[in-house]
Image (cartoon, rainbow, N blue to C red; front, side, top):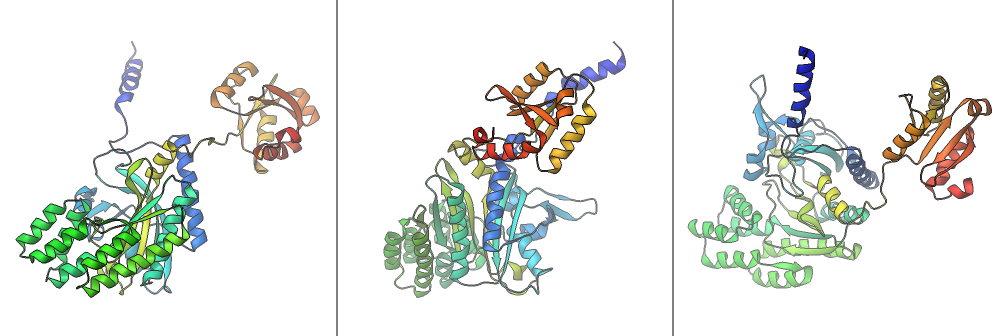
Amino acid sequence: MPLQERCHGAYRSALPRFQTVRGMKDYLPEDLAKRRLIERIVRRLFSLYGYLEVETPTLESYDLLAAKVGEETRKSMYAFKDLGGRMVALRPEGTAPIARLMATKLRTAPKPIRLAYLWDFFRYDEPQKGRLRRFYQGGFELLGAPGIYADMEIMTIAANLMTSLGLRKPSIKASHVGIIRSLLAKQGMDEERQNAILALADKKRYEEALERLKEWGLQDSIIDLLSNLFSLKGSIDSVMEEALGYLKDFPEAMDILKELGKVLRYLRDLFSEVEFIIDLGFARGLEYYTGIIFEGFTEGLESAILGGGRYDKLVELYGGDPTPGVGFSAGIDRIQLVMDEQGLFQGFSLEKPLYLVPVKGDFMKQAMDLALKLRSSGVPVEVEILGRSVTRALRYAEAKGFRYVMLLGEREISQGTVSLRDMERRDQRTVKIEELKTLLENERTGDLAAAG
């Protein structure tokens, strides 16, 4: 066997070894089209709420990305030294790059400023349902606006996104890190220790958190109070009533809780189809949160499909002016997963172009000319370029799922028409070229019969 054939055979046999890196995903045409559909809905909300889309590099300084993201995220970052010896990392989340923009290029921009993004992110997590190592998120960040009205706007967008997607049984659970932080700070616990307790709470390791507080010498009465708060989860009114009883001797924590209740009751009045829950044992794993935190859920997936909160000190940490911020991001891959499982893509299909087949002679130039003319008027066209017979071309069209095939021969060219074959109805008609676009538009609105 010639060397070239042997090498080619070895290469072909080796191809199956080359799969995607674990935790990474290929997006085939239908997968990608579904993702783009979700992204269009997200971008529609960017526009409706006045959020301006930005893009930052996928690769950033390690120190920038590692600051305040929490130990769990730091451990899962794709970090390495570049050829210049600088420590860099692939972004694991979107708020840090946004805060960098605010501290540098947007430092003097009029406030508040509303920024948005649709980026890919990377974390070396254990792959599982709804969790990839390369994943996409759409984010909304509102900067330069303190107070509950900014919180209300961000959480309104989150609820609006879930209802716009048509997700089943949408719910939002919320808390406020200021409640636990204020209680611990009153007992002399510094921010580092507060972060450690919140990190344990984020993993629902409440007993370990309480044991740690005992080791640090916290009073038994405060430990009992925290134990009671960690267990509180349920409807807004029931949790508020019980928690306010526990916090009667802690006015700062009471005021924070009342603010949280005000925000959630406002949202409950706006979105009757969304369930709103207070979970005082809930703590997101990112250390930069200073206020309200929340996550969104839907039927069929235990993991959150979106999450966010208030971060009032992050821009300042990066050298910017003190700039309050609040935002959230939605997991595009997780949303696509649950929409598939909930049957929300039923009836969805890739838009197929017209398939143009030149027949009985060398009419490829005329076919190319006609295709260009149709495309310039907004009609997508795929031209048969392999010289297949009509029979083989129709088999290809059926395998690819084309709805319409245009046959172009000498008679059609002389009359300015095409023979249009409907692959679904198994019929064929002669159509004038100038009428094709109108016919297709009518077909999309269900009026094809009238158009014919």
